[in-house]
Length: 291
Image (tube, rainbow, N blue to C red; front, side):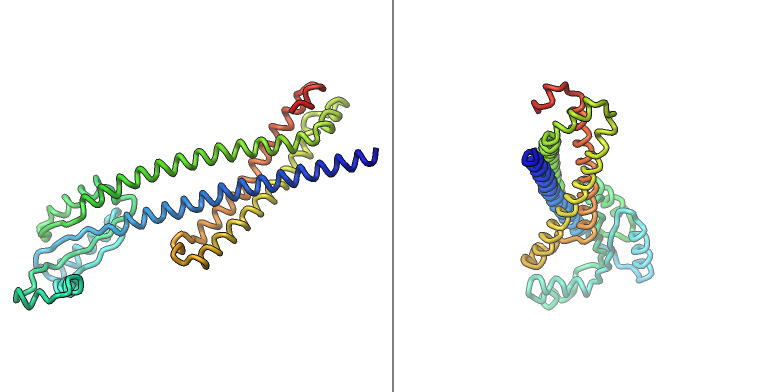
């Protein structure tokens, strides 16, 4: 009898260990995917914010330029404004082409201009075209120049990319839920005899479920902590070992993902444990063994 009890206890401990490790691995996989997707979304926002619009200006006074700059900075769509003088534009062009075009032409034909960087959510073709038409109507503006085809191509590619990310996220979430459900059901199955005995002696549903739910909270918390440590270790190692991927390292995002994994581990463990125990309680004596 003692041997049988020890065997059952070992089986229960092993089932909870497997359950905790399984939940931790699933959370790690889900957290890693979330962290990578967050990094990729930040990269796409950076691409959008680096698309520049140039407002070519007529010859005006410094006071007019300062007034225009103030108006542009006050716009909700604009992230950054930089005034480029004729002299600076000439120096930049000389550095780009490698020749002194002023010596050849005898003068500097480049105008003063504003270089505009927009916020990521405003760098869509419709908004950019609308802003360009608005600025073009200003009497101080000669011309508004921006890479229209590039903005259109970036927007189309980002839409396809977001669709792929959404499909991957949904697929991963479904797989995660199925794995956790089956893992926790197997764990509860290891204690099916205890559940059946408690039910037969008249224990209430809450009395039976309470210890399982308390244990599930601990398992979910431990699994979330393990998954968080694994993810943090991977991110730190990646940042040090592969400096070219340092752009995806975001401490605030890492903390949010790790916190989310801990909370999600507890919630999922609670929900699936409650469902599994409730199912076992509802079964008849012979059915409880067929899980």
